[in-house]
Image (cartoon, rainbow, N blue to C red; front, top):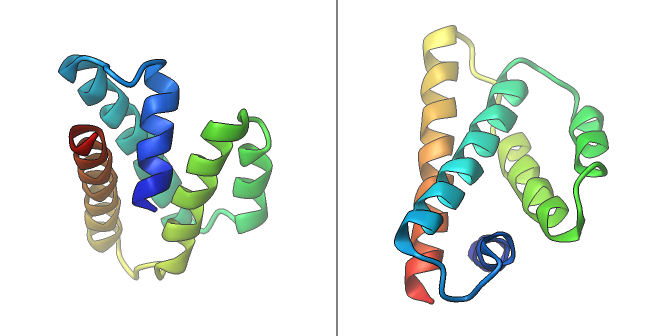
Length: 106
């Protein structure tokens, strides 16, 4: 997964030498998408709906979106709103961290 995120970070930044602010903005965007996907997972949105959304993206973005969807849908739907919100926040942070470390390691 880290390779997908790293490739997508460079794809979206448009350069291999993006500034730190660009990397943070990109990672924030990735985290927002991840959080939205996990929220939809917790709201019991069917996987097929997520797959339809993925088709709207270009190749690099589609690969990243599909990876996020796979990760989110591998996790269980939690029983109460507090746990669901914690899962969303944790998932967002995980993707932000992956993206940030992938951008820094290059």
